[in-house]
Image (cartoon, rainbow, N blue to C red; front, side, top):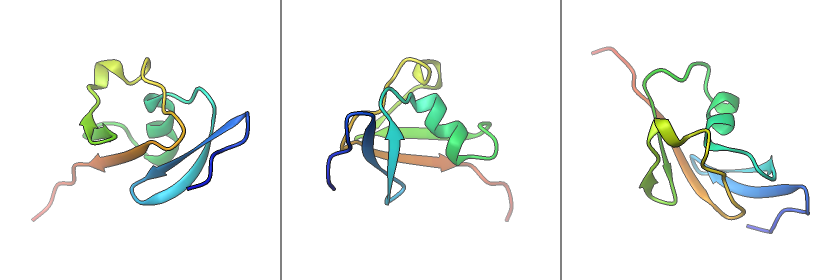
Length: 74
């Protein structure tokens, strides 16, 4: 994965490479990739990020993010 330019960072989100604005938080990333945030869990570089920290944790260049949404059904 190539590094982003000065205004962007490149990250892997659920296996897809994305370019995000430098300073993007986990909260902003989740809002961008999910229709709803209820029932969503996030791991950043294989560490679970508590929902209470989403607004403070910044995604950095080269990060690997997994966003998982719970689904009801049988």
